[in-house]
Image (cartoon, rainbow, N blue to C red):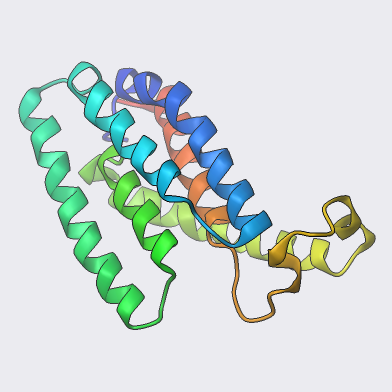
Amino acid sequence: MSITAQEALWFLPFVLPICFYVAFTDLAFMKITNKAVIVLVAVFVVLGPFALPAMDMYFWRFLQIVVVLIAGMALNAAGVMGAGDAKFLTAGAPFVALGDLRLIAVIFAIVLFAAFVTHRIVRMTPLRKIAPDWVSWSDKKRFPMGLALGPALALYLCLGALNGA
């Protein structure tokens, strides 16, 4: 992994609750809130200088934000993803080391598959009655991508904390 264990350990305690919040709000309301996205960016802005081994890396990570923002806006305009999903991807971009792009893609693919299958199974079973008012149960056209995006970032940082450079 390109992310250092120290970097992941700095970010993990602050990013983990945001990731779970994003998964929850997307399940319950089919929305990723602006508050969650702003707090995620704030975590990077405040902790980045301490977590990253060099200040030039800190500033380069802001370029990742810009690149993902432009890609997310294009994908949202094309109807491929929701605006909240694009915003969360943008806010999460600086936490991923550039050398780990393939790894995060694999993590996301696995988590997305697991989240999709689990969501669809629970939606068709009595387990759904635990939270009967969640919007994601009745929305037949859309899938709550926050259920995959949040845990994918959390898992990446957990793996970084355990196996980072």
